[in-house]
Length: 520
Image 1 (cartoon, rainbow, N blue to C red):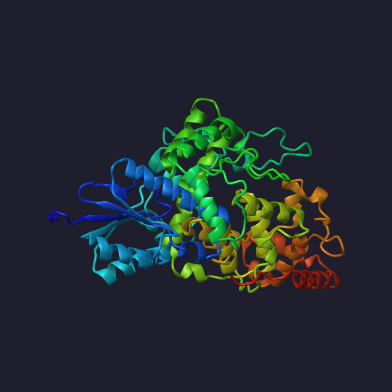
Image 2 (image 1 turned 180 degrees about the vertical axis):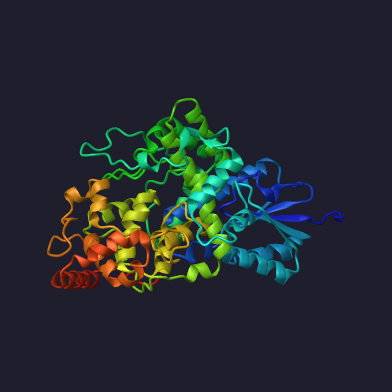
């Protein structure tokens, strides 16, 4: 029994746990318990976080803390610029424990292995019990995924996704998938064609209020040297704003989302994508309400099954899958480098200063908004790093730094596994390797680029195409054992020895022309 004047539970809330309905608050008694939150420099500097990402987290945290205080709850909140800020979550929490003397700590399971270990260390060091509760934002638990994975030689998304469809009943009728198919990907691979996307719905942008403006000013001073800009910050920072963004996506973008989800167009950042991943990952929205809204749009006739299934698969399927991969393979997963890549990340990833049109466009919008859609991440920035041979841990560090939706549980498997094949096939059945012709097919980038995606050698050779052939040649022995790469590997045999030598020479010259990023 808690003595009068003593604190029972100190509820730890992290920057990606901004939901008053989370498991950490089950049984919360405002008379006995309190909330603890802290802004610390370590969370913005353990990777060189971009300004958009820092500002989103800090603003959303401050708004959430105020919403809890409005309920009459006690919130102990440390701001980044508070005098005496210890700089790390662990040190700040130890300080809070020494001051507040709670009987125990309570939290929802974090989304980052590093943070979990740090907070467990605090519990051990202070002797305070730490009650870690399941994250109810997901449709499954890590234990569910571990049970699914047990005894399987391969962990493929499709089987886990189907299992969850059956378990939840989402897009199911009479035990069978709605529309007669589990997956409508074949209908979701269109480009915009020569005419382009035409008139697009506007982005759901939210003008910074006083709290956000204060954060922007702080970030611009405290993290002035960090990449990116806050000139056009407009992300949802409250649940109310996130719900507006959800409604706008369902009404304006979802019907054409599937058809054009892989398409790109020069200068068009938002297209038909949802832009909800940051709100989902900060827990301003729940996965269930987003999926339910999309499913309702199908049943009402507002959006076709291909669009709805494709969108739901990203949340019910992919999001649950990568979380399972992360927590069942950490911490050694972070160190995997199956292809033995050793190159340093090119410096232009931090500046967008490159003459490759597709990369320049993707990097420019990434630095400007903290956002790029999944094909830009996988088949533009990710593909180039894969073919260039960048060490996957450096690629991971960059993705974790620059994207507003980046939390390690979702970012690391997507980057190291799916994009860079660093896990050797745990996630992807083959490396996502392609020439510049893929980008030409899915965008208009090549039309205004100095390089020709058809050419692998010569002055106009596209670096993607050159590096693609170089990649196949360098990894020929390994890739020849992969049935899904058989056709691509066979094409190497069609290259004459002189052509092969020219490709390797051009690839080497290209790498030499690209300056490496300074360590940060």
